[in-house]
Each structure stands twice: as C-alpha cells, then as structure tokens.
Length: 194
Image (tube, rainbow, N blue to C red; front, side, top):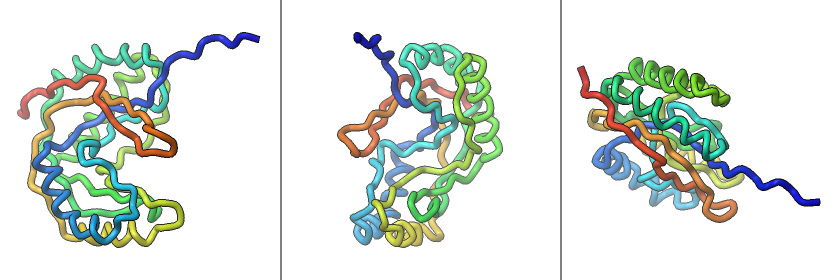
C-alpha cells in the first residue's frame, strides 16, 4: 500500500523578544546559576521570548496565511515598556524569569494576536497568558537545580525596555531529544509607543 505524502508541518508560535542588552543583563544575573547548576538544560539566550500564542504543529502553508494579518496587527499596536523581574519555576521543572511593566498592554496584545489567528481559521489550544521567559528545564528527576537557580534571581529587576517587533517563530528539534531551536519565520515592527 502506498501512503499519501505527508503535509509539511512545523511548530509555531507568536512572541515578543527582549532586546539583546536586556538579555545580557539577565544572563549576567544568572551567572551564579550557570555555574551552580550545569546539569540544567539551559535555553540559548537568543531563544528567550515571551509567547503570546502557541500554535503547536501547523501545516507550513497555514503558517504562511498568518503573515499578512499579523503584519497588519503589528502596524497598529503600540510598543510596550516591559522589564524582566525575578525568577521562579513551574512544577520545579521549568525555570523562568517574570515580566513586569505594561502587563495589561501585554495581555491586550496577546488577545489581539489570538483573535487574528482565530480569524484565519486556525484552531489552537488557548492557554492562559503567564508572561515569562523560559530559561532552563530540569533533566529527569533533578528538580533541586531548578529551585536553586530560581533563588539566584531573587531580587533581580532588569532595566525597562521597549518591545520592538512581533515575531512569528518556528521551532525545530535538532536531534532527539535535543533542545528546540527557534527561528523567525517573519517579524514586524510595532507602532511607536503613544
């Protein structure tokens, strides 16, 4: 029996990314955690992002239909002032740093993004927005390192920064069970802040 060809798919999400100097500031604050917890699976700094809508595995041609609606949205949405704040963990397995600043505006942007995705007819699981940057994941049965790494960020407050671009991102897995690698499919400048 000949199987029909598979439709090309990719994991995709829509996100904001801190500027490089804000990432460098956070990486510096994480220096003690990097040294104390080398066993964590650390995300690459260039992959740190705030997910607004996680789309999951989507046919490539469907991802392409999102470009124009997201470009139109970005052109009308003002830049937001945000900052990185402290650290914590989800279920002692995922290390994160929080987001402060115009969090209400961030929620409004996320809802506008999700509405555009729904308008394109794309079904996706809508998770509550918990603004954060995912920094690392524990390897199996090693939750103590995540807790220790989160403690290194107690009291950390990053400098404020302006969001610049809305990113449509695709992720791939390089090797199994290798870390995810993220790459912009496209990105659009947000409107200047009011």
